[in-house]
Image 1 (cartoon, rainbow, N blue to C red):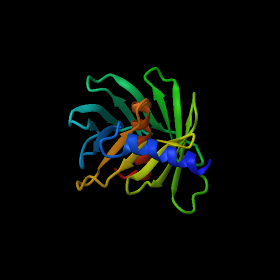
Image 2 (tube, rainbow, N blue to C red; image 1 turned 45 degrees about the vertical axis):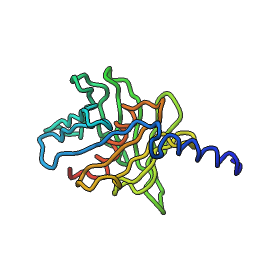
Image 3 (cartoon, helix red, strand yellow; image 1 turned 90 degrees about the vertical axis):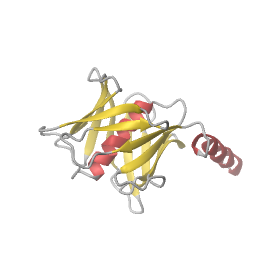
Image 4 (cartoon, rainbow, N blue to C red; image 1 turned 180 degrees about the horizontal axis):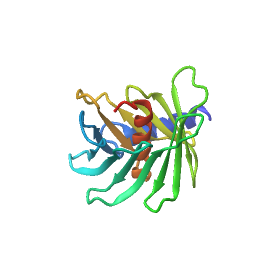
Length: 184
């Protein structure tokens, strides 16, 4: 990638993720005390856009991502008997969409990998613990997760580039958060 290509890529990222950009913005606010880890994901206007329905009393950690009307969009579930922590994401019909797992070696910063079933794999890297990271596909940023705009504990923003699968990006964010913070 040459200097000109990199400059054009940064310009495209600013148009999508910069102030007044075209990225869709969501606010994820987890409840401190809730049965089954249920919480709402709100859009930038404060409307409830998605619900994360955590299933209580299960052997495996399980979440359903639903639309505001309660229709299940996908299921996020830990995989047992895997060497590394991993969570599978399936659509409403049980078809595998993606597998989220921690990278084997990540000496400088947290890195996760998302194996997409039908498409390019994604990379998740940055400061995962503090909710400051990016999701990339084929070298271009498709989402940014940041806590910098919020002072409330366990609240962070997710910006999704136009044309990307919003539900899948949010499901990956839920999976990474569940694996990094299993005590919640």
